[in-house]
Image (cartoon, rainbow, N blue to C red):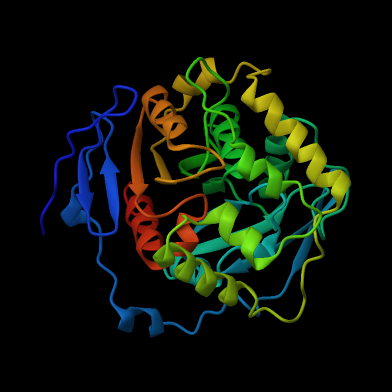
Length: 326
């Protein structure tokens, strides 16, 4: 297995290696080597009868909020925190099933989102508080967390606020709080993200790279997502996602001073992103890795904000490998 060194740096941060379908950048004291990342084989996907397209929705109440959630698999609990405007139905089933081969995967709708009642919090902090209440309502004393985009902001906050509750964290296509090197969301992404309804083409533009290979894999992911035909989550209401936008803007402006608190995160953190993310550009991930004490960074080429749906097996295995460490 060969590793190619990159000569060009970005914002004075170096990319260390290229492995097959992804790059790995390591924090100084937490090395992962290319040979440690499992290579998927097609036969492995049939080892289990797990299905993310028919697991039932359950509900649990905490502080007057009725949280909708689903659980798939068994093992150490792994809480997934969804992106802006996302519901439980917006995770790629193949990605969930890969994670569920090693973990008890918990997906949920936070307060005011889709099938969960209440009003969406106006700050990332309050979203993190509600997520902690949900975890405690299920009776867990400690969980691993994976947050996508806005969910990654919530995950960072939870790791800071609840160090005993969070064992390890995975930040997927996310960003640190606002800082002098912050690269904002592109106008192209904004134009699509605020549309009332998304077409398949909108989905591809927001979450996948502008290449035939990425678009092809994006369509395949979208078709897997559409396989769930019963017990469907309702769309996120306009008022709810506008409140999410407002909370994200507060994060981009570092209104709650979390950028200065990133070094308080002592848990191991895996940061991963797509090279051509137009939602939260790659430069932000370099800053996030630099400012987080015990972090490592993975970069997937020919992909964007939904790289984990483009490479559900590869990234699922990388997550499983990261979480298997004590």
